Image (cartoon, rainbow over all chains, first blue to last red; front, side, top):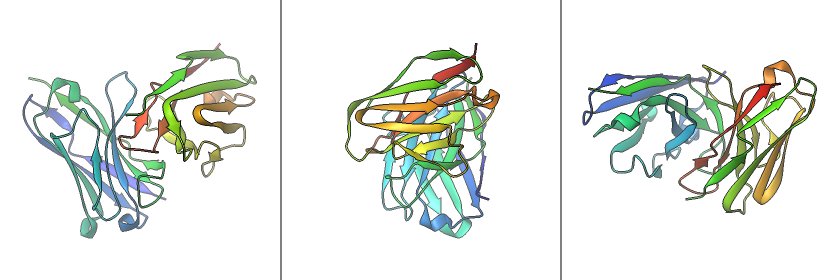
Length: 121
Length: 108
């Protein structure tokens, strides 16, 4: 059974940085594109960004473009989200999700349980 | 950016009834790359429908999706108690991917 486990969340001050990790197991990580999706407290889902199966294509949502960076390590079966210049409005649960295939043209078929990031002074 | 608008915001129904949830896209999804997700409190979302009308693995057949272009529908026939949750549509046709704002299905 596909398992995605996020880590690295916590409380961080505005303008600081934080890196989230998503450990993947029980599937061939290198064959699937991956996404980050976030959800502010009591709000809906917001797409953060995407990385293709081989890391050659990376896309971001407008609200995080230029501040967040997505990467993946095939040897560690791990997805990363590097967040810089954090703002209070970045406070959310961050989910990693697996795409059903190698590109953007697949739905998000498995999700982690999320990690909470709180940006506050 | 493709904007998805879901209607209604809240739907109050009783177990056994049929639920009809709508999702409108601001631009045509020519490849029908439209998905539906269910989210229960304290849980991650779960994929229900992809490609506008294909059920994901393990999803009961009381869930069905339809539509094309800019107009999509999720139908749940014979509501079960566990179906009361929030439902989101998502387009994965273009970047940025976008989600609708959600429809809360509550027990009447």
